[in-house]
Amino acid sequence: MAAALVTGETGAIPRPVMDDYRDSGLAHILSISGLHMSMAAGLVFFVVRGGLALIPAVALRHPIKKWAAAVALLATFFYMLLAGAPVPAQRSFLMTGIVLVAVLLDRAALSMRLVAWAAVVVLLLAPEALVGPSFQMSFAAVAALVAAYEGLAPRLAGWRAEHPGLPAAAGLYLAGVVLSTLVAGGATAVYGAYHFNRFAVWSVVANALAVPLSGIAMPFAALGLLLMPLGLDALAWVPMGWCVAAVNRVANMVAHWPAAAVTLPVLPLWGMAAFSLGGCWLLLWRRPWRLWGVLPMLVGLSGMALDRPPDILVDSRGYSMGVRTADGALLVNRGGRILRETWTRRAGPAAAERWPRQGRSNDGRLACDPQGCVYRVDGTLVALVREEGGVDAACATAAVVVSAVPIRQACKGPAVVVDRFDLWRRGAHALWLNPGGARIETVAGWQGDRPWSHKPHRRKKPPAVAVTAAPEEPMVDTPTDDPDD
Image (cartoon, rainbow, N blue to C red; front, side, top):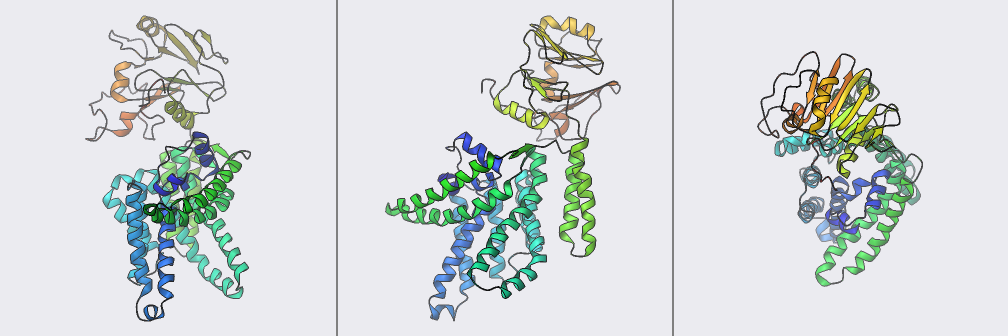
């Protein structure tokens, strides 16, 4: 855990501990991102400025605030290099660096204009970051915090002036931690649901308890790095370990509370776009009409209730298949951990029963034999072929055929045929069965024939009566994990 806080390396953390951090909403502590960069910059800034302020001859004649900002900028750059300069750390350094540069230029350290400039710099360096969760969640959190404190700053300053003293300052700090967690968590929750379909219900409580503890641990981490060349770093790692153990206990406690982490329905692309546009309207304006942004945000969130998960999933090799049971669960025949977790998260929940090798599923929808399986829903018969011996019977009786083996001969009976070659060319498939036919989404169809696409090819136009292209995000990813994982 200490190595993760210092360098971002999480490989040595046991899986149960990682699960506790995810379910409690504390996983962001483990990645070198905005929290770590801001703590490192703030620690260096205040130590350098406080140290120089103790020397009257320097403090009265020189701009020690700017000197401290320059030293903090160099220190955070070194910290980013120490962590291996991963993409989240680069974005966090840019945002923190712009704040420190604003101090050097006598500008407001935190403003929506600086957030916009940070976004511009990040997108100029890595335009593909726009569609990634790290960019969306980090900038949504920062923009929401800036907008919230722009409105609350005068009231907080007035309250602090009326209530001097250490107890009031401590209460204000705790209220700030809770408020920041609420604002940032609310701003990032929808983006987390869109990308990961998970929501930590008690994250506010977990962060209110754990963030101050991690704030105590970070100075010891910096001290440990400074003492490491002298062989005295144990003096810092031991107290840091106490803080880490306390954070672990908080994560474990909150993760085991009732409904600590819930799986949310899939948010379609149009829903996230509507929510994002409404959020920008709400955060950027300062007039009362900013509240109109809540309307498209609510419309976007309604997409979760309107989404319908696929009836059939099949990976790019035909090795793993999943079908929808009568109670809405997803029944998967086989596959590695990554594939099962992805399918369960995007189209689950997972069914309690096992895929029948011989016989029927509990709801009677799925019947299997050594050659393959037959899946029936809403009057549509689907053949899931595993061996070449089952191709003829499938083509003769089924309306939809999904085959893990090539279908070399003509298969004219079914309205939709997906064989091994289709899976190889277009990647994983998701099928929605309707009375009038089937709708199919593929990885290649979502990516399009672009120079950077995987296996670009010229696809034939699908039959209009049976298959329609869907513009939404694909429900499946091309699995790359080993079958025996």
